Every structure is written in structure tokens, then in C-alpha cells.
Length: 303
Image (cartoon, rainbow, N blue to C red):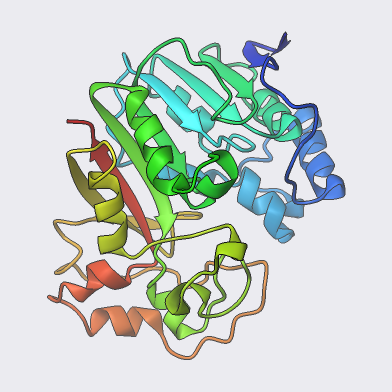
């Protein structure tokens, strides 16, 4: 069953009939009404005082797409598209983008905000259930890999998730993963872990009951290379990948003068114990900058 919102097609063949996660009915309905009824919200809106609204609608989210090698002939798959924070930016660079998203309401937000673009199709449902009929040049996992436990029924969900993703790519296809660094400098300075809202969770080690997991740089690299990909290239978004103000490549991260807005968590109080800009400056020329960056954007190529 399909629905058209403007030029965007929504496919409900794999929808369970229930949105299994949400920031709350009231705030998500408010966001849906904003994109349906208002113009210019993507640049500035009084509701940006609410973290959920700013997170889902701010155009600063689109910055994470800039380093990605996406050609105008590419077929792209965006897994976990959410409310379409980066869908439009991807669609404007490629031939076509297929989105997969569990939530119908979030998919409707995505569709309404991009209703003038004719190269977007949204599959509402769990990635594991959606039957895709083609292979892709590019696949994106932006804030998604850490939730593999929820997408994949497996004793090794992170490994199997990447293997399935690899199988969806054309030969020499490219995967882009944006994810927090469990050893990010901000977590040592006192910021709460982004998903669980508790300090030092990633540093001390996740519990299975947490049902979410991020990785250090070497852990993430090994995970990718051992599950369907032949090489990786790292970028480093600051203050993190959610609202990136600047993105450094692995070729320059050691030696460049790092300067970035430190604030990245707007939804909870922060007890910050030191200045991150000064700490990163003290590591100029040192490879530890790679290890301590707050987030990663990884390009992984299928061999």
C-alpha cells in the first residue's frame, strides 16, 4: 500500500501498524504540524528552544552529508531516515534515495518537508523486513548502527547488520556511518552518554540490558572490516555528528588548529570539568586526536 505526499512516495507494505519509538506524541505531532503548515522553519523557528524540534528540523544536521561522495547518478539507501533531517540533502545530490524508517509519523514528517522532491521513496517498517529489489551505490547509517539490537534479530546484531548492509551494495559501493565515539573527549569532560543519559557509560562499558552500543575508533574499524568491507576512511565532526559545525578528515586532524563550539547536548544539564578546545589543542601533532574525537563519520568501501 502506497501513499503520496506531494511527489514523495510512502510504502506501508512492511509497517507493523505501531510506531515502536518516539520522542513523545505531543512533541512529534507538533513537529509534524510545523512542517505541514509553516514555511521557513528549517532556518529558524521559535520552537527550536525545544531540543527535539531543533534536532529534527535544524538544517545544521545536513552538514554531515558534505564529505560524502555521492554522485548525481547514484542510487542511495538511507537506513533509519527518521524525520528526514538529511534526506533532502542526500536527494539533491543523487539520482534517487530510498529511505527506511520504523515510524510512520516520522516518515510523514520526512515526506511533508520534502514533498517537492520527486526522487524520494520511504519504506515504513523494520530494515530486516523490507524486501529491497535493487542494489545501491551508497548506503547511510546516520545515528543508526548503535541501535542494531533493535533492527536485527541475532546474537551478533552489529556484525550481522553490517553484513546485510554490505549485501545491499553494488560492487565498490560505499557505506557512510555517523556515530558517537564511546571514548569521546566530551564524555571524559563530564557529558552524559547520548543514548542512555548517564555519565561514563560508554567509557566503563555497556551492559546487554542497555540495548545500545557505541565503539572506540579501533573497535569500529575492526567491526567494519570484519563484516563485509575492505577499507575505511575516517572523518571527525565537531562538536559531534548531530549538529556538526566543522568536519575534519583523517589527513588533517593531527596537525590542524582545532576550534569548534563545545556545546552539543541541549537536552540535559552538563557538568563540564575542562575546556575541550584547550585539551585538543594540547594534542596538536598527536594521533590521540583520532581516538578522542567526539564522533566519527566513516566511509567504508565494499571490496
